[in-house]
Image 1 (cartoon, rainbow, N blue to C red):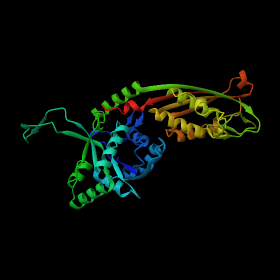
Image 2: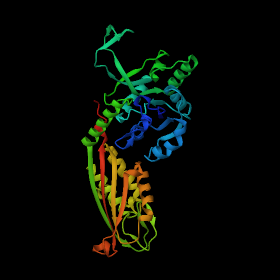
Image 3: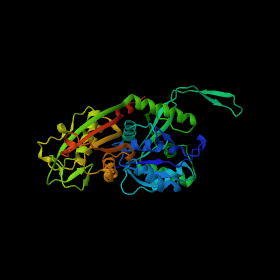
Image 4: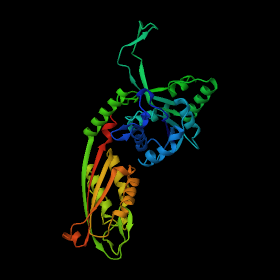
Amino acid sequence: MKTIAVIPAGGAGKRLKSHVAKQYLLLDGVPVLAHTLRVFQNSKDIDEIILALPEEDIVHIRQELVEKYGLTKVTRTVSGGKERQDSVHNCLNAIEGICDVVVVHDAVRPFVTEELIARVVEAARAEGAAVAGVRIKDTIKNVRDDDTIATTVPRENLWAAQTPQAFQYELLKEAYRAADREKFYGTDDASLVERLGKEIKMVEGASENLKITTNEDMRIAGALMKNRIQGSMRSGFGYDSHRFAADRKLILGGVEIPFDKGLQGHSDADVLVHAICDALLGAAAAGDIGRHFPDSNSEYKNISSLILLERVKAIIEEKGFSIINIDATVVLETPKLAPHADAMVSNIARVLKVSKDCVNIKAKTNEGMGFTGRNEGVAVFAVTALTERKNNNART
């Protein structure tokens, strides 16, 4: 069954009084939109993402956000419309082939969780439509035009609707066709489905799942992000070394380096990737590369270490972690690595599905000292920082 996420991101940030649209504002150094899309990228319940953007932003955002942050599930970017509903409609029209469930989510709700997405999708599959929301805590007053209170509204059955909102695809298409015929604009997608007389399941969301609309919201979001990172960050250290050997290719960071020798090892002996794997596994308290990929197993004979790195990524994600950054130092006398550093960074970022800004590779000589100084081999030191996603998915 195929589930497609639709993210309307055509806002201009007017209520923030900012010259930068709110979806592009930086939160912990990363655009709000990228934070939101990362959650859907990591969600096991989402197969594709269709993104609606201002037409003039499409090319730039695909290059500087979608590609930069490794958002491979974004299969299409379409022009947004005058209203949010128009943008969602354009995304729905861009869906090709089989689709079972559509999940609509606000671009500026970056604190959505994979767990909430899963519950809303599950409810939509069972009930036809589902909406995330939270119970109203405050007393609600119905106020007259002259700002005097008319009545107190019973709050027992009142909920504040959020996104994600999920619908069986054909149901949402029918709701949009009806709204289009009648020139009706609703405040959310659920309101269009309600007009068809269909029941919609309310799924408990989280107060943290706020929509960034005002400057106050942005300040709250900054505090939430700071607390999230400080409360869940883990670091790991990795080290590996290999001696030079004749009749072997020199592979570092997945790049074949022109040289008269390669590195000795059971796999392709990519010592850089091996050190990064150990740093990632160490941060997640998941053992080491030798435990997961022993050299006694013929399956790993001459295997590309990038494949091992991809498997390490799956291991740490299974334990609930996401990568913040990686920093590695390669110690060798020759050859020079500077001409190949960008390609190494690109390979590692691509496999790990992170921004290239999250990966740093440096090369140092050892001034003629030790085994690296004698040009007998290569050593690599790597450190990494992870954030614990499973805590972020807890309901609040």
